[in-house]
Length: 430
Image (cartoon, rainbow, N blue to C red):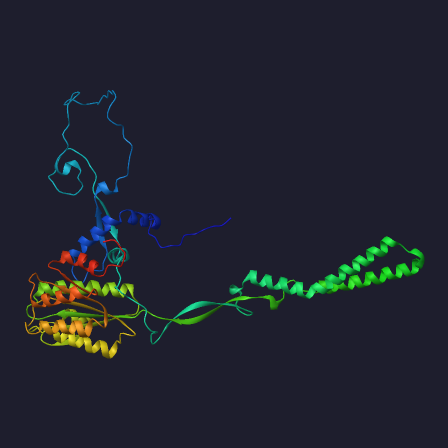
């Protein structure tokens, strides 16, 4: 009898299996609740868990009720207000039990609150990033420190006991016993047949002494052959075969994402906040889904500068707007440090679209001629309503290149659906 002990970590009176089934059952409602939660969050607490509220009607269990019809008489003790045929109004406000907490207090009515449960950090991020992937990601060359995988390489005559292949070992032992004992067994069968013939013939004219001597000779030879066959071991060390595995290098998927953000004077705090929220989601998404991913942070006004993560999100330097400076810097970094033959390159750019009017046409030329031939995907996010000259130039690029996408975001609530649309996994539902 087998005894199975579940040692998975779970709190008191909690069931992991039931919780997983619950999350799958109400997946759509949870996804919508996560989207609303992200819309109202700040940048620093985007990755924490969330209390999810589901309407009572979405978690109610189906029940059987008596249908209308038939003749029934019921006596309600203590009823002094209603008689047969009166219709009772539905309780109003909070007393009706809508469960949402709204309405005025009442001294009558009853109901149930909406169902509230907590998504932990891991569950929240799992719901948020499901069905997302970097578009057009392909395997390139081997990394400098290549990944290794264990691959089966047949069988070997030495190894550890846990790798012993019983079937192959017994097959080898059977073959060895057949090979070593085949000739002795054939000879044994012949001698046994001769002995049987002598015993059936009897002494005959040769005399009893010669007949007995022949039988004793056959018996001795038979015993010697049986002893010889018996000395063949059932299982010999040379029969043992072990599963052999070798480590082979495998192509690794290496990607680099260039994050370009406009920090010019026209980018007020609200617009910068929208751009930062987008890049925060992008950063969490990339580091969650891909182990070999590098990020290049470039912030620009009239001049572009490569900075670290902290400087990208928290530096206060500002100025005019020359978008092409960031594109030129991204092209230089890509060609010097990330050759397209070894890396999958992605670019995400966030701006309000305001640019020096003489520079927008140069931006289109740089993107089309320099960057798009190198990258797998280019995503442009505009955080302003006005469609200025940069938007017009980029619209021409989007019409001619499928791996260039551009979207517009005006409020925090729009970031989540736009982000999912830009990085939706191929074949996944919208």
